[in-house]
Image (cartoon, rainbow over all chains, first blue to last red; front, side, top):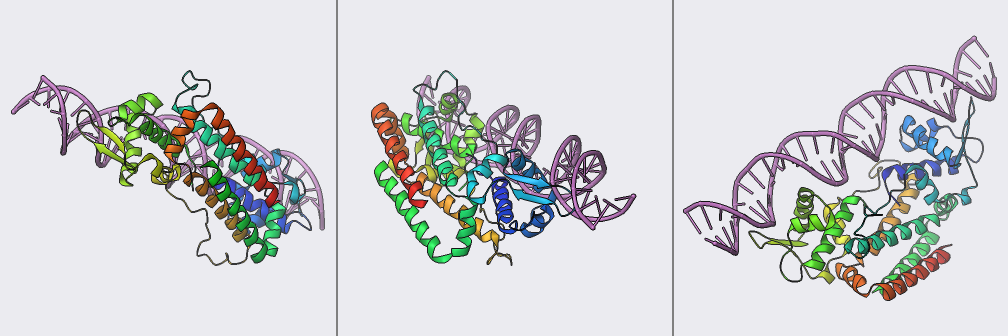
Length: 159
Length: 159
DNA sequence: CAAATACCTACTAAATCACTCGGTTAAATT
DNA sequence: AATTTAACCGAGTGATTTAGTAGGTATTTG
């Protein structure tokens, strides 16, 4: 799992689409203006999103983009994976000295972390983000506190 | 929190140091050969690590590097923060339209994730990695399974 | 037909990555 | 003292990524 600004741009744009696309398609020009992302860069991002079926484009006047699926069927991980290539963290994959050396130790570390992040982001849908914005204060803090407690639990178990 | 190959190189090198530095300093030339990282690149990484007190250099023949602290006092997060600049995920920080718009939603998402990753990596020390390697098979798999179960628990709780 | 919009290709300045090169100090060995 | 070993230092480099510009073509609406 790779975390870059590119992926964050894509999530932000998709969230804009989820929020403003309830009645009719949203143009990239609108998103560009709303989010301060250049039009051509958005086009590149949406080409990738389209190829993965996350958005659906409608040409011509009055056209724009729809979400490709329901907003609760699109996870943040889906979006990031669509625009950011999944780079392997390993280097000695298939090399000779990766059976017992130190490399394997860090490999399992990165693998664990990568999976951890993936699971975290797979569980958050665009709809969650939309609702999170509406409910805001109370519910959000509760969720955060619960997740926090879980992480601390994981910490003590691992130690 | 930024996750790049640079940080992974640094962790790998530090782990090499923790494993091989028990009796006397370890030269960068050794680490270079062991881990397949160029000497000059290691020098750059260790300049950053040294400035943060994570390693201590000894010049002259028989010299090399020691860990700056005990291996159970150095976390993976410490290492990554030393070599990877901490880039802010936000863009509209201090801008006018970040009070209630969509941007704030993604901001809290990235902040949560970033903190999540930081906590995860802050809890893993070099010593943990060394021990993980010695106990190997049995204990390692148990730990992983336990962590996995925890993560699944977190997922269901959040959902 | 004209306009709006998606869709597509190529190019670019800036930054980062991993590395090379060519040094200079400081300490141990001879 | 001379040599060697190693840390330490700075400049530069090709490859890649980032975020953007420019200039189109294709398709649909009015």
